Amino acid sequence: GAVVSQHPSRVICKSGTSVKIECRSLDFQATTMFWYRQFPKQSLMLMATSNEGSKATYEQGVEKDKFLINHASLTLSTLTVTSAHPEDSSFYICSARVLREAHSGANVLTFGAGSRLTVL
Amino acid sequence: GENVEQHPSTLSVQEGDSAVIKCTYSDSASNYFPWYKQELGKRPQLIIDIRSNVGEKKDQRIAVTLNKTAKHFSLHITETQPEDSAVYFCAASKTNYGQNFVFGPGTRLSVLP
Image 1 (cartoon, rainbow over the protein chains, first blue to last red):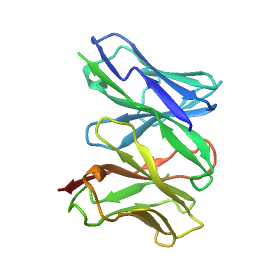
Image 2 (image 1 turned 135 degrees about the horizontal axis):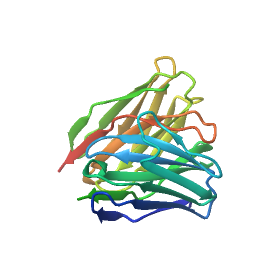
Image 3 (image 1 turned 90 degrees about the vertical axis):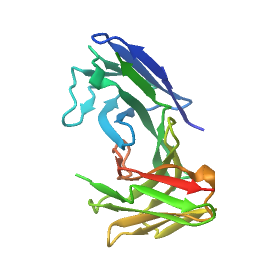
Image 4 (image 1 turned 45 degrees about the horizontal axis):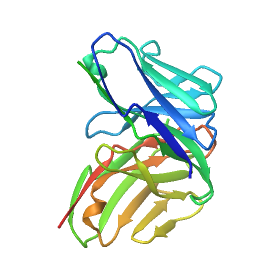
């Protein structure tokens, strides 16, 4: 089945550095991917919608210069946390929609495994 | 925009009992309602979904019901087992490709042995 591969799964960095997280769709093309942030014991908060070949669409309150998204190909979207600070520490998850006839014929969200970022 | 509420936030049941989680949505144009299960530190996994043209769907011990008029849908788990312990998220979406899903805040289910 369709799989979304995300890495790194864990990353620890120093304050002020930048961190790149990759999200790849395996065996399918994803013109749209979604990036979420999840705080402990909380829900998935959409940060931005990544569109292949065009600019990402950011949700209100998300700094586009802080969280750079690039969707250069139909199988790869990247999220770069620039000049990271301790408050950026979180669990970041990407997802892509896959047409699944077995699931009501709808476009089902398939998630990556997530990336836990710790900024020291 | 769409707003999804979910109750309860935590739920503890004895093994073998049933568990019910309820969600409401605000946008009457939403027509696709999936449920995701997320175990600690892992990715959310789709467990069941329903489209607005049906009122109920069942898959073994899991069922989902939808009331379009009242704009609410529920997840039912029967004969719960310890491995059902996880956080469950409901979501609402329109089925157009590229449309985002709006997630509920989640329910932490604990199945006690």
